[in-house]
Image (cartoon, rainbow, N blue to C red):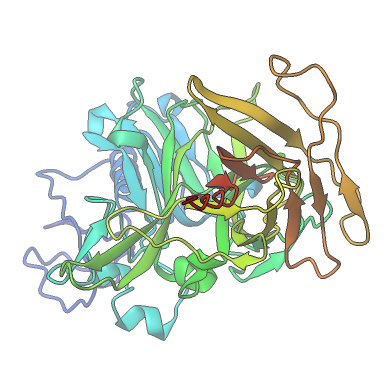
Length: 463
């Protein structure tokens, strides 16, 4: 998208027009493209005023700038506030698909949310429903036959990246913005940092968040459009989860991983149909607070293996049915299962689950009249998961129950890395237990187990 300046009854001061030089007041020209807004002034603007107007449009319509973006305040050049300078190396490398959120009250610009407005040229995305120019930012692909899950969350499904302040709040201070741009890296995922995060993949593209004013409001991030389709395949919700990776400064060292909040999707409005498709990945409550004077934050998106149940006591467990009107999150709640044992001294549960990202927090709780009693609360410390079994006996035991050391069960990793095994310690008969397994990045699986003994044979009546 290109800015165009025309001065009626005067030669153009600066002409960046795709129409060419003209002073025709009727603008009798041919132009094919998207014109979101037209500003008309009754006098010729000064260079500084024109610069402010250009900055206003750059921010409002997510136009990647070729010149410095400034605020609307200041009547002299030495009074202006520079918001983004693409000529500086740190900004120049991330001057792609630039978006900004914040406020500038003097220009009337109050922008709690912004989206990328262009992608790399790709015929597929230029001509069909993914094209940002051809679709409303909050529109659905098929409003008549589908509805959003969760309700009213139709954030820009044709645009790769949407960033906004949670609940559309704005910074309390005027003339403050967050700027987000990327380095134009490849978006194909590849494995990284397998030492600390076994199975983690990350895309090659990085984003810079410039928080000059140390805005501390939480943000909501949505991945959709072309970026979503490059990293998400149909039914990936059954085998993958997505994370936002923050880096330590401009290095490749991972500072933190944040699991996505939910898959945004659309489902058929026909209650008899259960077809749905995921069209966006959402992160809620992402903060960009500055540490000391560090105003630069770097991030990208990654993929981790899902944490889910495979079997219980050698019985295959199916993925739970998805509620058609609820989003898919990183917490998987399974139903209650009944287990019958012949020997009351051998009541254990063998659990097989996909690896996720080790190590794990495993919690076994018994339901009692007053609530729950912790039986096992262990956090496994895995050093070598390829050729050893681990008997973990260092855990936090419920001291109110028993002061004696307890068996916390056994966790094993088969050599093929496709699944993990955990066997509970001996449990009690005719009790209800809640078992929760959480991995390193916060994925969680939970199920309820009812332990039973066979019913005693009925005594024969004597004549």
